[in-house]
Image (cartoon, rainbow, N blue to C red; front, side):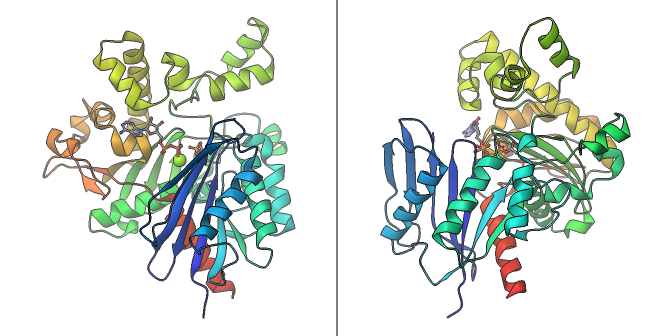
Length: 403
Ligand SMILES: Nc1ncnc2c1ncn2[C@@H]1O[C@H](COP(=O)(O)OP(=O)(O)O)[C@@H](O)[C@H]1O
Ligand SMILES: CC(=O)OP(=O)(O)O
Ligand SMILES: [Mg+2]
């Protein structure tokens, strides 16, 4: 019997999302989520899809990512899907920062681990959690290939003109300061799925992908290759996000340090965790912000307007970068669910061939779909992302090739 299952781990700063797939038909056997790791009220939700069983939820303290992963392994074992299964071919890990070195999925060894560790300063919220996930999974199944799929990989095709900051070259190179970009697994998956929705090959279309989750980024994808993206050295640059500021004048930092008396660490926390939507209006969930706007809340309305203004600027910028655009694709939690965000983002862009049809925009669903009016010059689409499926696909392809 050949092993055909892949377990995918997406370890975030305070959560672990996971999915177990059978790669013969990419079917999902189980998935789940552990959130609020490190708090008293951590929550685990596990759904055994293979057996069609009910989801199981558990709330209580889960101290760290190591404990979280062990709890996940126990839940999987209850359904006969434990990590000891001979049908497991590999474990695929989302790794957020791969620097310049990793442009492909990579089997993890000590050298790869050391490089992920070295990159912690430029992905302080993400890489440490990714490393714990890898170490715990390796301890549970030391015989299995552990594969890293990097958020940065898809963006390594960016030309130097897009990847470099205009700062002194020697200083930049000495400290590897350049734009890496993130959410690449999602941008890759969604740009391909958008081409498919248009009945074209990825090499035949130019797509602007808007990944709007808690973290958010845009990318310009030319004939299947990324040519620009909004996140930079770290996942802080670009769009307004749930808790991150996105673009600011870098001098804001000097000002807050010199005039505001804040330390570098305080400013780091401010821009990464207390800014964006939550900093502007106290909520980072778009559902809550829309509810408050409906009640006439001015603060929520201003936060929404700032979010949309930035998004629209990036659509315009990437339109110019690409020259010709076949489609704009909205994805991730906000992009897939928030019709008012999609409507507002393209409002007034009719002269660029961009518009949404109100009825199509209001339709909900899990399938990729067009929301632009029939005959529109540029397709506007909602294309649900599936980072876990993409990680599983890349992981399985790599282990099949190397076996
Ligand atoms: N029905 C909805 N309407 C509007 N926004 C939604 C809806 N469902 C989820 N969201 C938004 O999606 C966000 C989470 O997106 P997601 O892609 O899951 O984020 P991440 O993977 O970064 O945690 C939430 O913070 C919320 O703002
Ligand atoms: C890189 C990044 O921002 O990831 P997430 O959206 O999962 O926080
Ligand atoms: Mg996400």
